[in-house]
Length: 251
Image (cartoon, rainbow, N blue to C red; front, side):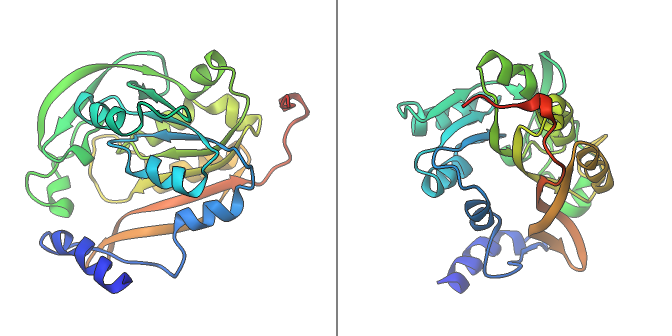
């Protein structure tokens, strides 16, 4: 079954000289299901796209309250079709960044590469010609995780998932208070290693920032490689510092 699925998934990637390789028999989601023991976890799906990851979380955690964030109108419309009627979902057509306001958002030829960051001309070397080509740029509302949590009386986040194409560190900066107070149990994010977007952070930037907030890297998952070069991977960070006394969470 896995070999069949793996071949199906990798077929379009191999046309670009890429391959998705499975690290071991467990993926990042099975690890999260082992780590998070809350019967009704609070999950932030930042960069929800059309809802594929939200659906995975719903399957893993049937009692979860999922806050999904997707600024791109076409993707959000599909997200709403899937989960708009579900009481366990709160859908937000907003970008998550390091400040509240309005930001420019780039819509690319491949919707999966849409980003608040401009495309790096070197990106075509890794991902293929035209994949990252920007078709249009729109203005979208933006907020921060800290502000959203305060406005919605959220005092803990069990899983903070970030997949926003190079904007992940900005989102983490906007969650600095929740992270510093230990109110985020697990951070799951995509990190791009090859030049893809202008101004994208480096791997060590994430390590330094999260280490400063009391988190360590658990492991890497779902690597995408081109030849011997790692293009991107997913990473789980967990809390490794005692929660400060001023972060008491109400029941």
